[in-house]
Amino acid sequence: MVVIDAEDGGRWKSLQLAGREWLWQGPGLLSGPRTNHTAFTDAGGLDECFPTIRGMPDHGGLWNQPWSTSVTFGDAALTRTFTSGADSVTADYHLQAPPGYRFTWAAHALLDCAVGASVLASGGTPCRLYPEAAPYLSTPWPADASWLDTTWPTPLDLNTYGPSDGTAVGAILVDCPTVSVLDRGALLQLELSCPGQPVSTALWRNQAGFPDETPYRSLGVEPMLGRVFDLAEAGPGDAAVVPPSGELAWRLTVSARPV
Image (cartoon, rainbow, N blue to C red; front, side, top):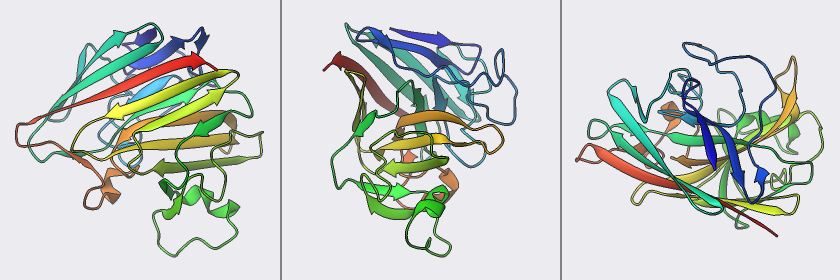
């Protein structure tokens, strides 16, 4: 079962599957909806990031406006519908925008996981590691690089949600449509489908390294369209593109089971 806060950016505020809650409830940085806020604030749950994830506007332009079944950003309109199964939730998305419209999108899911949780993806999956990881690497960051090309689980073993060590790192598992999370005897699987478009999974592993002033812990596992966080950095093939029909559909399926 999924519970939505329509007034707070259409945020998924609860996801209960396989007898437990999967979404982190946030650090209590604010009360009430974030309508018209200009600076992104973590409220927990799952935010819809569109038409970019990082960059301008930060975390996109949907989290700070109320939703109905659809929401608009500029000349793009996004509609979302849910179907619930026994231990699964499917979210179907339909975008109407001008042909050639480029964007990235992510289901920015922050998960309620304990120390020792594992993020499961195929070993050797191409992975883009972002500059906040530079202080924790054994080699210097390449000059002027927006990301470091590596392979999963990267030199930082991002497959483990470890103890609070003051680190916070973002990465993208490139062309990786399915990722699972193993936590406290249950397995959560997130799978994204959008034929003909770049489908990846973003990861944000915050082990009390962010923000600088009052750090907290959070684990983001984020199915996404695109291969970069910031739309402004998207090269050929790095962003989703609306086809000549002016319409694009994709499906996110989230399921869980005890193990």
